[in-house]
Length: 139
Image (cartoon, rainbow, N blue to C red):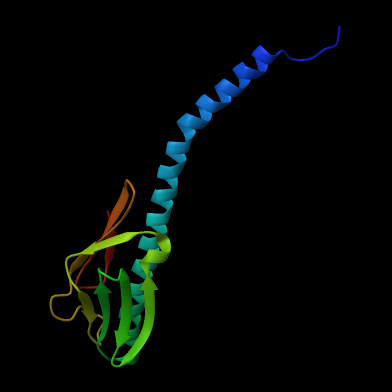
């Protein structure tokens, strides 16, 4: 008699592998969404920090213009666009309480500079609260 596996044993192994895959795939999708939202939040925070940094170094008002429809953030200083962040590249949707955040030459928010930006993808979401001082808190 030759050593080997029966068809029934192979079917049982395949069934167990299918059950394990069925359980792990939704968890992997959720993890992918959380990682993507976190990456988009980090880049959004960097864009806001860049705007504050440009305002301080150039000694002029710099703004982050937020377009929730186009899903973009643009750092604008005078007539120059310093940086544009396209959140569609992450597959992330954005909601915001303001359409712009501006920093004066001292690095402090200009006008009503506090804002909350919410980024979401699938079941994952995070909110960035930007204070008048330029501090960013992720929740």
